[in-house]
Image (cartoon, rainbow, N blue to C red; front, top):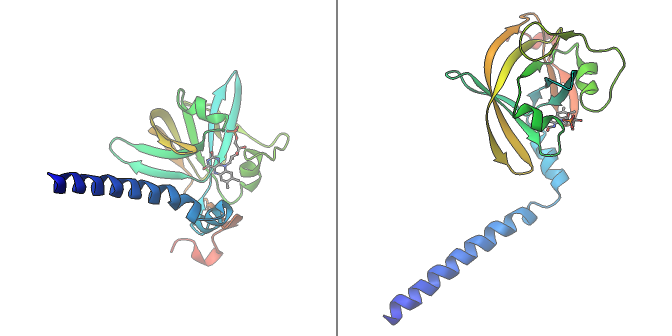
Amino acid sequence: MTDIMWNADIYENAVDARTLESDQATPALGDPRQLRNALGSFATGVIVVTYESGDAYHGVTVNSFTSVSLDPSLVLVSMKRTSRALTYLLERPFAINIMSDAQLDTALHFAGQPKEDLIEWVTDDGAPRINGSAAYFQCTPWASYDGGDHVLVLGRVLSYGQQEEARPLLFHRGQWTSLAADDAGR
Ligand SMILES: Cc1cc2nc3c(=O)[nH]c(=O)nc-3n(C[C@H](O)[C@H](O)[C@H](O)COP(=O)(O)O)c2cc1C
């Protein structure tokens, strides 16, 4: 009996120790800016998610985009909880616009550096979308999940189109970039 009690104490301590270890894991990572820098070594494309609200068209520049599923056809973006766009993407149609390397101004525009008369909107089908994008996907909200200080938003693709000749805008280590001419089509 004594042995069992003793073992139970050890077990509880072990659980506490695991909890403490996992609590301490975050501070052990150090400066969050360095973590962000290290994560930035993952090169990505860039999209603008567009939607309509209050009779106006809006967009937000995002690089946390990924395809998730073909059947059903699902894509994902990870949105900051403080993003104005987030509440809209959970409840209304939105379009994913994949930026071409000719659309840096557009990506900057929807990341807080607006320019007058820059965006040519297309309103043929679903949410408003941006003319000249490398590809677009018209989506309807499918699900959302807790992602810490972000929310993972899944959209179901209802229609799409692409410009096969377009070259992608890229983002790497905090810099905008594009494919070298020789890399196209490899
Ligand atoms: C290259 C790049 C990638 C970005 N990726 C994301 C992202 O994945 N998720 C996000 O919430 N914000 C991202 N942002 C930040 C938003 O574009 C920015 O905060 C925007 O102003 C938010 O607009 P909103 O508050 O109207 O939604 C990114 C910005 C840049 C420049």
